[in-house]
Length: 190
Image (cartoon, rainbow, N blue to C red; front, side, top):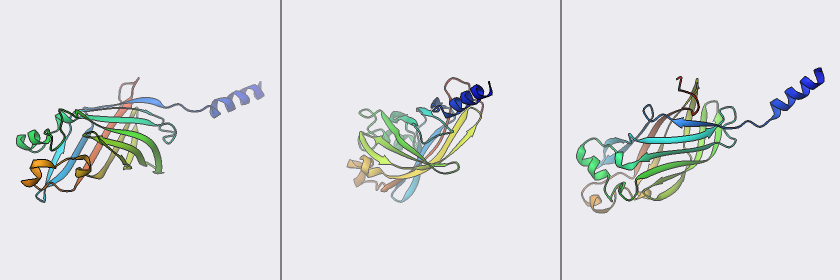
């Protein structure tokens, strides 16, 4: 009986773990950005965020699958004129590109709660590889990813066209995120 119990215990502890499904909590998550116009910083954000993940906190490097999306038409800048302009072809061209996405390819643990995501950021139909570092915290049935990354606006075709003759949009933008997700089959308790 002891041998059977030991064999069963060994079998159970050596089975591969499976990633659980997580859902982004859009009401508690934020994606913001800071850019410059004529060397003056301005802030913006995307209030409409969705996301899902298949993730095992005990083994994050194994089979993690994450996608986060924003509806670009919901972009908000510091005033209604800038917000309206951000939706035009010279910026996010929201009519032709209603969504911007980040899709995870791989995840690496750097140390403790610090991780690095290898993924593809797609904005305005332009896709580029990004490897942002972030902090991942777990509380109850919730995960929270906090980080920021710098990116070149112009690589994505943002801030170009007719506007560039009147307003000098800076070459880089700082994108900050605070994303909170919970296990899909349980209510959040964080």
